[in-house]
Image (cartoon, rainbow, N blue to C red; front, side, top):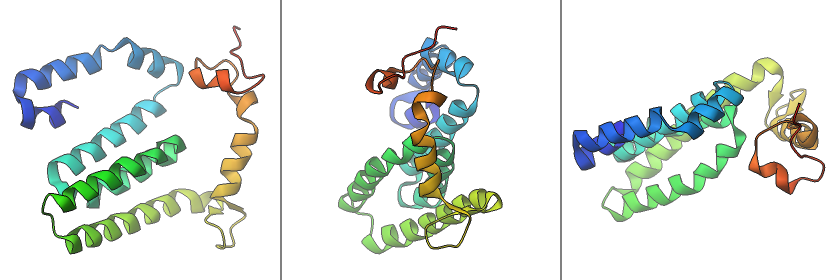
Amino acid sequence: AAAIVRPWDGARSARMVMLASVFNPGLIFISSIWTQWNVLATTLVAGAAYALVRWRAAGLLAGLPLLAAATLIKPQLLVLVLPVAVLVLRMWRGGVPFGTLVRNTVIGGAASVTLVLAAMLPFDVGFPGMGTRWTVLERVQFAADRYTTTTKGAYNFWTLFFPGAGTDDR
């Protein structure tokens, strides 16, 4: 986060952002409860954001695969597709050639799909029509069907919306 702020607002602001991130009680709490996977996913998203903001169109080549890796850890991060699409549109409106954006999006997207397949295929999980034992959609549905039982005890706001999914105080 500090690396993203530094070019726009200087070193002092970057240090303030870094300190606010490092000593943020929310991040410390979530990291200790949910282990380090959220931290890794957040780091990958921050790296993707840095690449996209700093390198603009060229950042798509690194940013999209970083977001794909973060989504493998935390599928909810798929919602970041919309802000990335808005950012690409703003790049185009800001003068980046359309062909460059299309080329880099296709290359970054292909690298993302390759990364996702490299992570899933050893577990016989693939995309629909690939002939693997399971599809990624089946695995997501399997996990979603068990959400209320696998998330018991979570310190999580979302449990308010699922009947029977209250926190377990053990």
